[in-house]
Length: 176
Image (tube, rainbow, N blue to C red; front, side, top):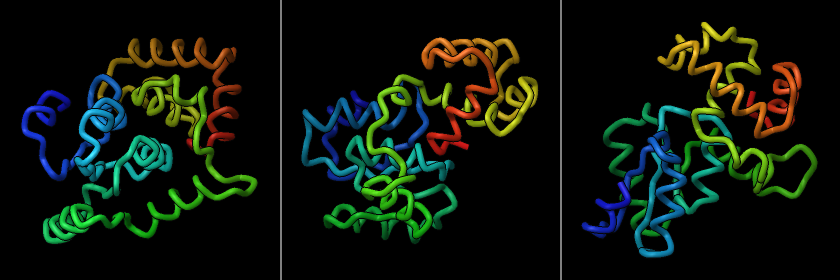
């Protein structure tokens, strides 16, 4: 994605949020300094607050889910090209909460959470919702061994000792 954007220098990039090597947020972090005039509209199947906030913090001008109609998507692309920000009402609420200065609002920056890869966050979210490793594997189309590896990595990065502590940690960060 980074090489293609650098090569073509488009006016607007429709950016998938979940990609290998750090996802859409990482693409934004790498491109924005080099091409500050390129506008990004995030597109994802996810409507999770942390996904929305991560790409907006990284510089996306809007965020739409893949349930959007083709007509609405074209309108959204044109709007961000014209300088508007585009969010569905539900997603706009996440963004407003993230930047609100009040107790319980989502943090603008969470260095501990930022240490986790998008896949680790996916595994953590399902784990905190009470899914068994086998159910997480099935949901994410990965092996149980891979789930175990991600959980071990999250435990190491967060310096926590068990899934109950992880669940509380995830809940405190509104990942659940």
